[in-house]
Length: 349
Ligand code: PEP
Ligand code: MN
Image (cartoon, rainbow, N blue to C red; front, side, top):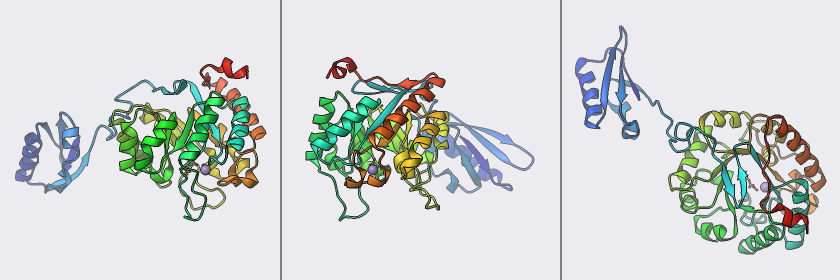
């Protein structure tokens, strides 16, 4: 950590800062320039992070040297992490292909969508049972019944399942049914929820909040990691923008930014990012090109009857085409879609 002192700081003030640093068990290295005095703090930066050093008279700025998300950072773990979702390994060159309807609706529909996306190359089935909706009058999801349907269909087609949890009181029941727990954009900074999912040992899909910075996203991941759950996959799903041409503003560069800062896998969700089916394929491919570890896409076999997010759903055949393109593009970068465990058993079905 570097402490920059104000110009005109008095010798007493300098001594006081040095004393505070030493009281906290660290060493202070004074560097006196013509116009500014700088103190380099030697020792464990964590000791100082929560200290209000800027409140000390004479201190102008305090610059940490290490990122505050120490477990999520590359310093902590230089190699890319691989997250294992019931045998589907995401990261380190293997791509997650998460697909399914926005919400679990009924068993037959879930089965027909699962069959189609699996044949197309998806390796994780999604579907919301607890839906965070802007309107309290909109479809809220089937709750535990939806979890049961998702689990049964996932098992039938040999696919791991991911579903969102919106309430800390539901983490236990969601963890019972799901292979991966999604924390959605609206809850990215629900710290009680993050702590609860961190206490499970289920992989977590953490979506970027709609007004969250990359730093906020990594700090939220840190909540989960700090509970001992190292299985976190990040997801770019667009942030609030001023342009209504797309549902959100797809910040595809955030993937490249995160790749420089963290070892955690990061995927993209062009469905929620754009809200427009015709934009999903190009934006999914852009995500792969910048280094995303997978793509999360909403697919529905009858979007006009979907109970949520129908207008942004891809049809199964459109998803199949996209999956082929993703696979081809990924191959250019030496990456490939993560295989399903025991794929041969299900192919025989
Ligand atoms: C979803 O995945 O259906 C969802 C609600 O996503 P987000 O949290 O990104 O809006
Ligand atoms: Mn949705």
